[in-house]
Length: 361
Ligand SMILES: *Cc1c(COP(=O)(O)O)cnc(C)c1O
Image (tube, rainbow, N blue to C red; front, side, top):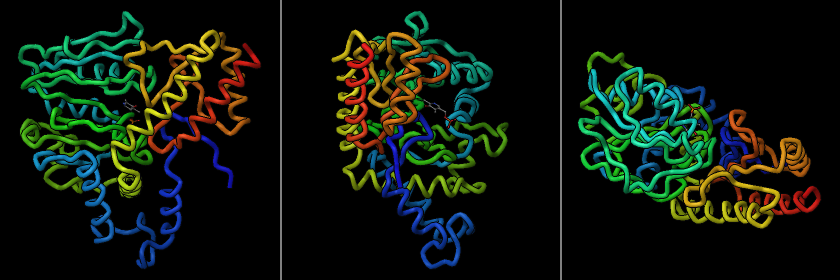
């Protein structure tokens, strides 16, 4: 077997022990004569997996009882519409911080449901900066304040969050979920597609404060209502069983590593290695993002020209490092270093960056 270092932005690398353990129990799950994905989602085997997955989310964040953990289909993208449909009253308004490509999508969907006030608009600075959270406020009559904790494409990440008082903070945490300790009691709702830090694609984790469930109107169709899913513990319909099972295993692995503190420590180590390589070779690599808000999950950088960028990506692959091409909308290079990327992977890439710069600079 030859596993390479996979820097893809998502789906992305997963912990090898998790993949191994899933492979071992894949054909026959715990003496049941079938795999887990062949049995009823009402079986006691799946029920235990489902509960443990939610339990791990609770334990990792130290979630108090008034928060519910849901596993939904439709990816994080469905939340761009479910959030406004459920949380904004008819004719209502909300606030949103526009910080890059993902918050732009959240904005576009929210605008179809109600009025969105831009509490911050980063487009003037090409989304390479974030505001001081202390300068942000929720507007009068706002139903919620939406932000994107880590812009996966642009590589900006909030270090601290605004205080929006009584207005619930709603956050798309898709690309930095379970990567650092965060006090979730400051949020009304957070959501995250699993496929960046928490498992494979197919499940979206939603954490919602119970009082907000009362906002889900009767006009909503069943699947689109948070209240439906909360009332049935995410078993209103067939949940994405395989994805939830893999999330359970991935979060268990994270808990065994030392939980969110350990995740943050490793994220800092990995990102320091890569930003260090950019800084050491400053005439060759450049990071367009302002230093105070650089992501520790998605490190974006440019080379002197596009030809060199192409060559860099191709040679990195020959050296066992894949997924380094930047998002097609922005170009350049991007190294995504989520929880499961070993520090050794970041070290190998940093070494390759030094070497490539020396040969091509
Ligand atoms: C990947 C991503 C999404 C979209 O997730 P899907 O599960 O593909 O819908 C949304 N927001 C952020 C910040 C992301 O990184």
